[in-house]
Length: 180
Ligand SMILES: [Zn+2]
Image (tube, helix red, strand yellow):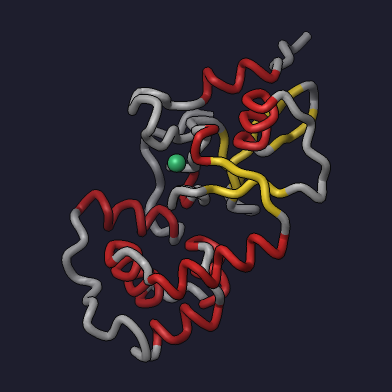
């Protein structure tokens, strides 16, 4: 019989090597089609950082309760980076989620993100797809595409590693170190 994970086992799939304040990337499985990271627990598929949030706070989340990230690693392009550090997680609702989105747009994106977005645009990804990856609206991506905002930020200047990450996100490059 296959072994079933307990909630605490999640930490075996999280890279905590950066220390208490760093982002803790999820090292587990990635669903290529759904483009999300997941973990199996008790025969169910669960979202890893929700499990961490529940353990850390000793609560059980309802499906209406959303766990949000205060850091930038809320996504898992290519199955990498999704942050599971409970100190970077907080509970919000859909409204909060869209407020966060607006807040991020108002205060500006890191130039690294803008360069990555421009690269993904050049690689042919849709505004919606890119928006989902970066937690910004489709319209905001479109204004980057059309040079309405961030016209001064060039997509040049990404390091090889950053370019690789972008290409993995766009599905143009396979990860060699993928463990199933
Ligand atoms: Zn984080």
